[in-house]
Amino acid sequence: MSRADDLLFDVSPVEDTRTPPHGRRSRPWPMLLLLLPAVVLTTLLLIAPLVATAVEGYGHIGVLLDNEQVRQATANSLRFVALVPVICLAGFLLALLTRAVPPLMRKVLLAALIIPSVASPLVVGVTYRLLFDPDPARGTVSALLPDENLSAFLGQDGIGLILALAFAWQWTGLAVFVLDLGLAGLPSRLLRAAKAMGAGPLRRLCTVALPAFSPSAALSLLIVLVAAVRVFELVMITAPGSMQDRTAVIGLVWWRQGNELGEGASAALSMSMYAVVIVLAAVLALWGLAGQRPAGELPAERALPRTRPAGPAIGLVTAAVWSLPLLVLGLTSVREPKEAALSGWWSGGYGLGSYAEAFAGGELAGALTTTAVRALVAAALVVSVAAPAAFVLTWGGLPRTVRLTLIALAGVLAVAPPQAVAGPLFSTLKGLGVLGAPAFLTLIYAALGLPLAILMLRNAFASVPHSEVRRDLMRPDPGTALFTVLTHRRSALVAVAVVQFVLVWNDLVVGLVLGGSTAGQVTTAMVGQARQFVTSSGPLAAGSMTALLITLLVIGSTWRHLLPGLRLCLGTHTREGRR
Image (cartoon, rainbow, N blue to C red):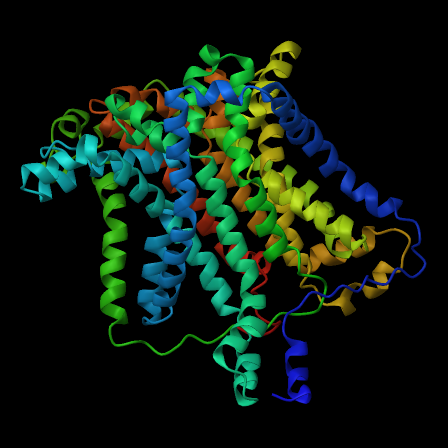
């Protein structure tokens, strides 16, 4: 290709390193003040506890290496991390499949894939425990396998595979959703123009497709990586008691044996898994989420390709397989408790007794209300703090080195497991006499969700046309420019709020460690029943379905703003006025 032809690729999505015009605004302090709430919250509740944990754990790694159970747990945790690229690759292939089926089937398939992603890991654990119960009288898969050897595989030998399947079932759908939005935002005109100018497939991929697709790919990897690092209740619930030692991950060993290991070794253990993924998180944040600078609107959404001949059949099978676990959970929830404990869903005994038992005593009903209020307040707090910080990182005119450093730091903090900050926070809150206090628990939830929210909003704010905010940026007070950006990206604020709500609603670790029985968290109210899983399987299924349905209600009621908001947060929204 000639040098003239190379000019074509100058309009592909690349980083705009120009600093937004400052006009009369020469003092950086007004902009820096917008960062102050985020800096204070993350410093007090994330950075300082992380540093304290690292200092306390320094020098105790050798103690951990001599502990056989810690070595086993580390290997188990690393297996979940190794699943991250596999899940994202599967998500990419399924995203392609959803674009090769008829529109109605596409909606059904996407719903079947995505619903598990908004369920809590505790609900997923309950679902897979029911599905893969090794007793053929209760377990769906065991009943379908007449061979005794295959049924036995669902016990001691196959628990690792079952856990991997449960983790993949929960998070593959989210990867599908994120990557599907990325595919929708690929610049089709540039790709066609590049092909017409003689660019080969590899050149088109590297210069046009990858830069446009990188935010979606990076965010999907980052989200699944966060889930892998924070695996806790999935193993706690799915694996029977006799298999817990073989399947325990670092978080579970930290929870169960922290006092036996001692403070130093416990701190080192909580930081060990985090240390593995720190570099990965920083690279992902910089690769996909830092290159977006204010550069106008993104490409229009690509039209769906033609339906492939085999697409509908493959899509139907995929939707059926993905829906089976939830079907088992739903049918078990509408059985009488005694029947659910003795037999599988196909044996009858239907009724609402399991729901009556789940809500008996009022603990679950109270926990639902408490958790909903806490999740709403935490979501509002996260949006209020993350929006100004994301605005400064996008339009604040920060030096490039400072901006990239802050974005990398946000990526690193986004994957911090709660266990890594729990020790110092527990000691501090207990010393102040406020351990389990609702206000402090809500602040901790907000701090844990803040880094990811900043990264998502920064991506959305970067797509606001420069012409819309140029005049406001010339004012000494950045508040006007911030208001303009927020006005243009209201749906992104809704998306971040919904994501934060779901994260708080589904959490067990923070409520269990820093709230205890007084936290009133839905998951902590349910986890006690799981100790007698077989006899409590009906009420557990009823509680799980209730928690999941409330999550789906929140998502469904905000879907009109949630979907375009997520597109904005991924940098894959359509041009104004186009659909």
